[in-house]
Image (cartoon, rainbow, N blue to C red; front, side, top):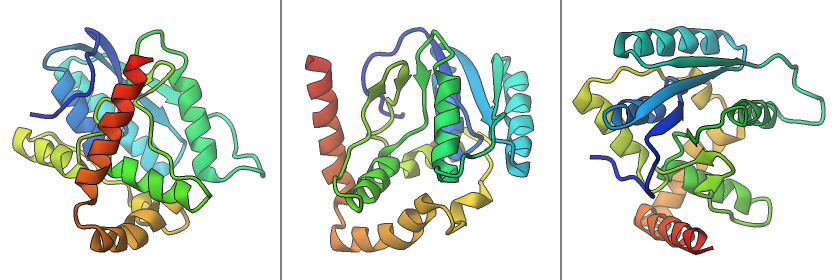
Length: 203
């Protein structure tokens, strides 16, 4: 069973990329919620493949599917990662329902390490307007294990290994050393996430 932070409403939109995180969450939440899958196509060849994959999965499960498309080129003052993120969140804001994303504990740690190199370590918040991240205390390993146990298919983005993206450098080059420095890093950040969530809920 996957751990969910907070109480979620019956009707949800799940942001799905086709990767193991979001596919596990879509499968998990579809058991007890009325879910709609939202896929944002960034216009890459792999993005088109993922769109067809997610759409087919949803058709087999009778899950409503909504597609968003990136119509704009990346401005010269932005990184490609930042541009994709901004366009994706514009798509998320178009929904009235809460949007559940696949952010997990590994993402929390990676973002903290990345933001620390820019002067201030930050914890990914549980909520950002209509975007909710109820799985940020769940490890990526647990989500992958869900896919394995439940035979949920997923795709692996080859861009995850491309060092031109900062997230790949953090994930593959820095994270292993950080875990060596603190083997209990996941427990440390899980406590931070839950503390941050509890403080937000009291506001």
